[in-house]
Image (cartoon, rainbow, N blue to C red):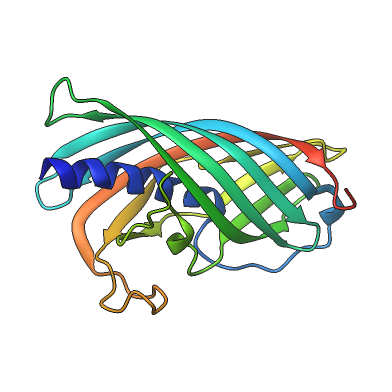
Length: 209
């Protein structure tokens, strides 16, 4: 049980970053879409509370630090690569806090919703691109329940902010019987997490660079 919970901590932290991109696809809005283009180096923080749905018992809390790059193509598609470092505070195992590290990559769609505002959505089937520093990919995955995530871009496009707002629910799903098939239907394991994060990015490269 102890080993499974420690392993779960890493994967919950990884799945939490998917919150920044939502759970559906979107088309680009032409309004000022040129503002959101290029590569942004980002850093941010967040936290998750992991609990058992049947009993409501909290298993542990995660304190997160993220860093990496967002890439926006200026037409509504983008990619993400980041490194997550976190401290998991295990309620059930006193004096056994641990620092975890993981690497994640995703593809996402986005659209401008106002003069300087935008929304993001995670593209389907990208959870399996997550791996730990040794190159191991998780067998479990997460279904995310919640509203769209929002961002703001500076007038000259030099910086961005992306925030989850209210915490979203991550439902841990059992691994598919055939690991080669895309993830589609969630078979809940009975473990969920409530997560909330916020990041800030600075544009370090334009598309032409």
